[in-house]
Length: 275
Image 1 (cartoon, rainbow, N blue to C red):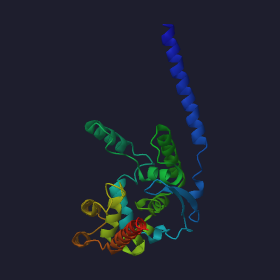
Image 2 (cartoon, rainbow, N blue to C red):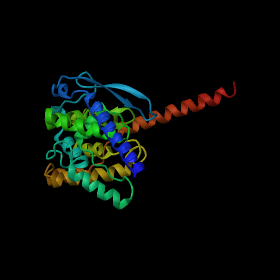
Image 3 (cartoon, helix red, strand yellow):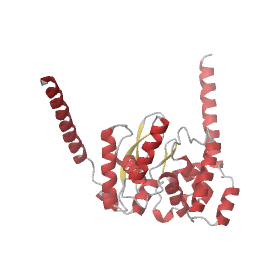
Image 4 (cartoon, one colour):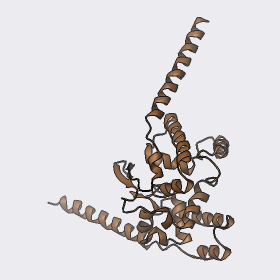
């Protein structure tokens, strides 16, 4: 009996300590109030595909910054239908999506589906690490709620679209539009918007267009269908977009440059062996 009480006391003490730790962690989080100012610039640490950290600017000082008025509505709705269908209905946390994700994960017996809203993803990308822990998730939820209280949905979407990862050190649709299509984001077609949105779940592996172009195109078809169902596209615009193949000459140029660079390094190393 004494042992049971002792163990119970230890467990309760651990819970209390963790609650205190969480409280301190939340207290130390940065304020999101400054983000309401459209002139705000934020320096964010991002990782390249080799795991090295780099500092980038999110805001008007960035050469890739794309203000909301220059973002096509098809681009905004493409990420909403692909990533967070209830974006305009929830307050930062989509409880229904969380329940559906838990049910799906239990059926699959693995963590197969996430339920992070666009607001949560924005909070994580701007302020937090990619560490998968309960503490980090609580911080993400707290920041998402604060952002919804302070910022408009339009501002949250603007920030999200300027920080999303779309390729190797390619962050934001301004950079993504140039990287893949050699054009500004404001000139993206509905098909190109759907193409970029289709990559979001995993531009490095699962939806990497260098490796799985057919998979990205198939998912972009799904995004276009959802845009038609939402009434974002007319029937004519939908048919036109479905008939188009994305002009990925910009991406092909990067592929060619990467191949040429690897070939040069290979021959340089090869010739070095005979010196």
